[in-house]
Structures are given as structure tokens and as C-alpha cells.
Length: 236
Image 1 (tube, rainbow, N blue to C red):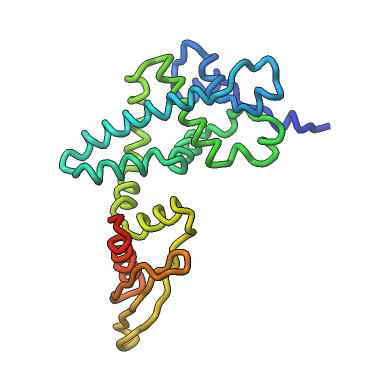
Image 2: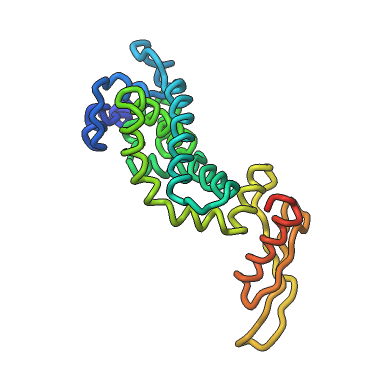
């Protein structure tokens, strides 16, 4: 008979350490980094969850990512450096790192968190990545964290650069941060022959028009509308 417990088997910390090429001297730290509080609530032998390590990992990542951005882009102005760092340490990006490393199967979760898909949820994956960084820092030091994180940063460098300088992405991030929902783009006019149409587009947030753009295709018009909206909203 297959039980829920059998389906909740997790990758041991020792196996994960070998798979990732991380030579932890204290595997208890890594085990703690992988332990969600829901698991501790159901297993008295589990002494501590990963929340303190998550706190530490967040601070270490802020420093490492900030230093990497500073040295990697020596001509970039301060405002763009801040945007780059923020885009990288966002929880959804950290969750993507966790997926790339396949951390989900190693997560130690309680029954409810496991049954509700916790191993695939951005919130838990981003947190476990931060906790892993905290544990790695305590066990092997800052240099080991840099050696582990820098290749991940290089992999997303171009995508993050594009995102930072894309007004549509910036506008969407702002709208979501304000809990206003995603921006909606609406074509309000077209002109010209079929082979050379031009478009007028409005962008709305929360039902309010915040920007307008004109372009030789919808994408260009939306791009200009988003840039206009950022200027109108004072968040450019």
C-alpha cells in the first residue's frame, strides 16, 4: 500500500550536498536549511526550522548580489544598479534559482504543505534558497557562497538586464507591488494601409488610463505607452 508518507520522501541533505558540489562539514546546518516550520510542528525530533537561516541568507545575498552588480557593470548608474539588485533578489527569481538547482525534492514539509504543492510554490522555494545561502555562509564562508552564486547570476544576467530596461516589465512590477493588478493595454486607433499600419495604444491600471503610445506595430506602441505611464506616475 502506498502511503502519503512514502510520497513525501525527501532527498537527504548528504545527497543534495554531493549533487550540488557543496562540501558541507556540518550537514545539520544544511538539513535545517531544508526544514520548513510545518515539518517541525509534526516531528518533535526536528529541533529548528529554516527561518533564521533564511533571514541570514537574505542579508548575505543582498551583499553578494550588490557587489557582483557593482563590479560586473562598472559604467551603470546607481539607480540602475539598485534595479538590477532588486530584480535578482526578488522572491520569484530566487524561486527560479531553487528550481534550477532542483531543491524542491529536498524540502522537508509537513503533510498539509506537501499536499498543497509546497515543493512547487514560489514562496517556499525562494525561502529555502535563502536558507541554503545562510547555511553555506555559516559552514564554508563568504567565498564559498560567492563561488556558488556567481554562476547563477551569470546565467540570468541578460534576462535581468532586459527586464530592468523594459518599461512594460517595470510598469507591471510597480502595479503588482501596489496590488493594483496587471496593466491592460488597449488599441484605441489604427491608421494607414494594411502593410504599414500604425497603432495608438492606451495602458490602464486599476481601470484608470495611465499612459498612451503611438507606434508602427502594437508592441512598439505598448512599449511607448508603458514608458509614458512610468513618467506620468513618477516612477521612471
